Structure formats: C-alpha cells, structure tokens
Length: 92
Ligand code: FES
Image (tube, rainbow, N blue to C red; front, side, top):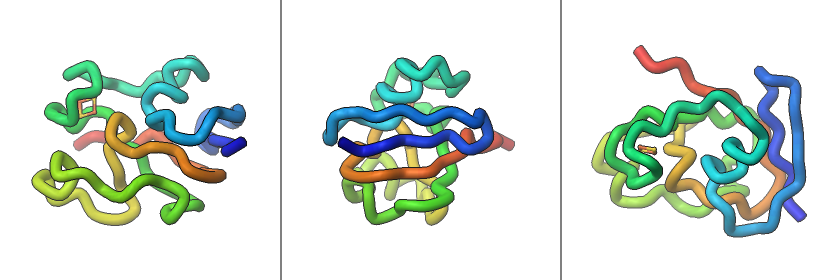
C-alpha cells in the first residue's frame, strides 16, 4: 500500500494505489487549495515532489498544457502508485 508523506506538514498515511494525491491530502487534512474541485483547471492544487516522481501516474494533458515541469505536479491529476514524499507548493 503506497505511503504518502507531506514533509512540510510532518505527516504520513497509507492509501490504496490509484487515488489522486489531492484525495489523499484531503483525507489527511492537509491545507491544499483546490479551487476548481479537482478538474485540472485552476492549478492551485500544485505539489512539489521531493521523492518518488516515478511513483505517480504520468502527467495528464491538463498538466502538460500548463507547462508544469518537474518537480511540480497537479495533485488532482497525479495518482499515487507507490511511496511518495511531497510538499504543498507555494503559488506565486
Ligand atoms: S484542483 Fe484545480 S487544478 Fe487541481
């Protein structure tokens, strides 16, 4: 079962593979903005990947259109496949 760690919040939890990181973060009560409700439109749910880039589903068209590059992903689009360490990304 994949383990998700938000290193900046000093918290971890285990989740079934295939859940989006946003769904997991909401269950973990992480303050992660998600203005569009997870539709991949707003870009506010951005996370920074610290470890485990290859433990996520591939970037979706919503992410590539926004020209998001490593180490950033949209948490509503990225599905957890294995252990991941992430941070809530600062939005400028
Ligand atoms: S919640 Fe809007 S892009 Fe992810």
